[in-house]
Image (cartoon, rainbow, N blue to C red):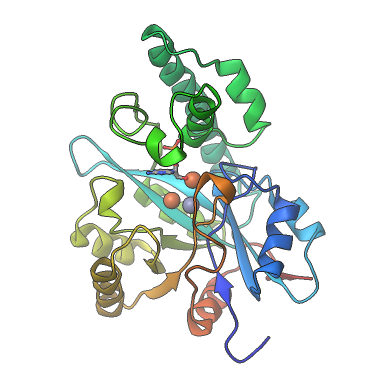
Length: 288
Ligand code: AMP
Ligand code: FE
Ligand code: FE
Ligand code: ZN
């Protein structure tokens, strides 16, 4: 690995709401000049094997996932995302939780489509499920249907308040965040709070919760992310220093569902090495 490797620890494939298959994702990561990429699909490890098989020479792959979590300490409960790296993909309780969340996403997606159809908006749940092609289904798949129907021009527009951002937004049945942190650790993985200050996405959790999560086993915070302003990223870095947590930066690449490019934000090699050293779930980082 070069002295200053390019490390991007958050990317999505068609196993969830990205638009590149896992094999194309790792090829795109190599083409973007990355030395390390993490595959972090929502609530699934289904893309891991294909990504490992297709790994280009010189690229290292961190197997991970982004868990849909919920903090019950706010009213209504606050959704948040936990990145989990290098955990055992066969840990029974974690596997069961991920399956439950994926199932709940389908029920919720279907209800969102019912709400849209009740207002005369012609989108089809079977068509959306077919387009998701077995990947974890989410609002971006419904956004794509709204675009196909010519009702909105972009994913960003589909996430506006008139659409999936508010009017047709329904909660998911996510994993309690403390349970998620405990399960990821029990499965030998390393939990990192994704975009913790992304206020433009909606309500954010208080710093006191992040301190409690650090006590409970949280390993790090994602600071550099396109949904953080420079001030928000700086705040996250200070908080991480205060709490002894590691700091990551990443693109949160979603293919053409978002405009951000692989490697748009990156993680320092020291933080990457801390993650690898703390993990005992899957045996090591795969390299091509
Ligand atoms: P869901 O997991 O079904 O609630 O959908 C959330 C996903 O939608 C996130 O993981 C992002 O990929 C995507 N997303 C959220 N907000 C936006 C936005 N404003 N524009 C585009 N994509 C978004
Ligand atoms: Fe996503
Ligand atoms: Fe996220
Ligand atoms: Zn993500």
